[in-house]
Length: 352
View 1 (cartoon, rainbow, N blue to C red):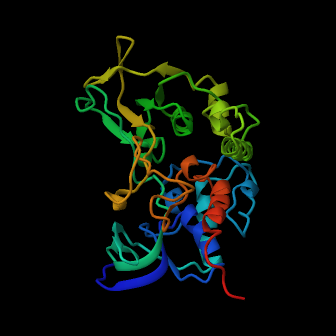
View 2 (cartoon, rainbow, N blue to C red):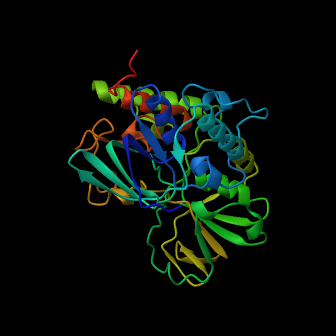
View 3 (cartoon, rainbow, N blue to C red):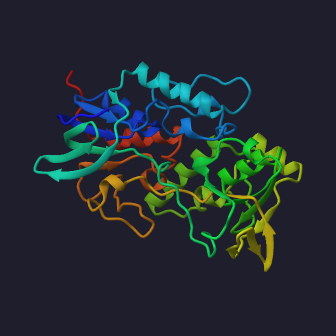
């Protein structure tokens, strides 16, 4: 798709995943003209790129966007394919004005708002909602010897299934949910070497996304009111014991090792001992995918924009769905709708 035309809209939403759809749902209730620009060729946001065995942390009925519940999934926590189907049907149900694939390259200020530059022409807008998530901005840490390792290195974004690693020894780096699920996935056909910065902290087996959302919301309310809090979700643990993780843990296949100090051509060095590995999977997180805003907003040391109630210095520039700094559990299906509602509450309502 390529065009040199200049379009206009009251609001341009950048990103057509779950956050962009939640924004679209509430924008539909206003008198504002808006468009959603998505750089994926198909619906589903980042869910269409996840590994094959990934499942949600909650049952379908607790993983819905505003307005329309996710259809039930009969056998426990829904897989990513179920989510992609739901998001696809959701955007058609509400006839959201999504253009794809459209890659936004830059946003600049104008006298009347912003100009959004893309490979499908430009868009003049009074307001911009950034809903690009973080999947396209994986974080790779720097370790001594990382360029010397002769085996395969990949990030969470590159992992799809365990079969390519059959019979291999694979170092998996990271102490969060992605690492635990990938270790569990690999354990059936490969020998994982799980390296974590601290011993893994599992949440109780009966804790799922419903509980996490409640805890995150209570923590945010306490902080806003100046009341003491127990630390929110971080106080519970780091890893949700979804069925695959729980089964691998109970089989003794989720043994964690200390982080290595450096890499060699053939492996990693832990406590002075070289461990031979064939591949390394870095489950080391992400940064907000905001390259199109370079030089436009102030950022903190962790690359997050400096925001106040989802807004930067310009109240017409908004952020949605990146994590707790844009609202409690706003990077989740269950949480992003509430954040979108509060974000767009001041918007002009449709005339009656």
